[in-house]
Image (cartoon, rainbow, N blue to C red):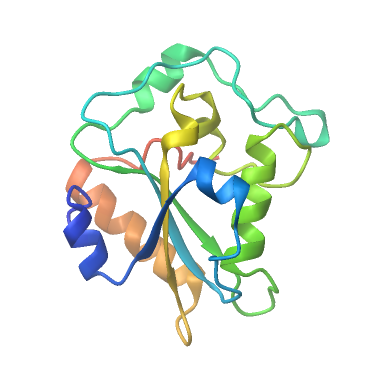
Length: 165
């Protein structure tokens, strides 16, 4: 998978393709299963970067980074801006619970979804698209790591919002 074609992402088994705005209004389509998910930017050009995004200040930590950091992290020629996971051995999270937590964080609530926080500093964050893949037997952490390795191989670095920290 090269992460630049929606058809390629669909062929890899991802479904959903709902905007952040739509999922904030109605998340009932999200599965109560473990899995992995992508946050996608469908535009041809990078969005504008906001000095202060809508993300919550979980445990008092400021989720914002400078616009220079945002600009430096942007990866051209891909739709994927974040790769996430939900659940696994010893974890009760589902795609639905994890994405609801992520969306709540993006609405300024103080919840624990620190990963992927850079998307909330994109001017078009409500237009970003989320797709997911349920996993019945594979460990979400293993699949996420595999997807990150594939992404790095194709693009030379991690997706925009997948910080190393």
